[in-house]
Image (cartoon, rainbow, N blue to C red; front, side, top):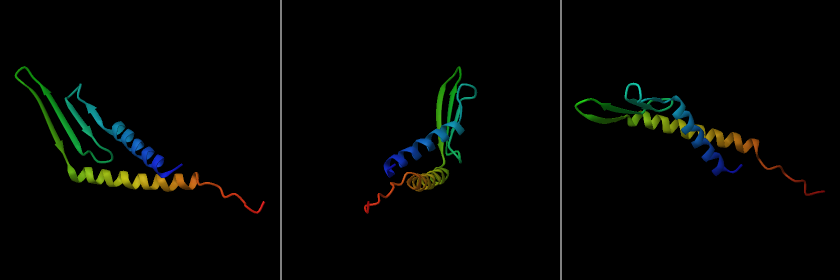
Length: 94
């Protein structure tokens, strides 16, 4: 497996884990909370008889932590997959 495929696999795994652990409760209380392991984005939806609203709150520090953890995960995944799928050496003496 080459590094590009391993990197895309790591990004895909991180996105799926982030979506699994996010709290997508807009139907019940109008709030989306997104992030893994730290929640870095909160989206509020409100609909009332008087108005309809949307508000976004983001935390750049927690986003930076999440991206650092994702980067470390992708690097470790690359190392593990390169060791598992390293090409075998062919004996040229035969």
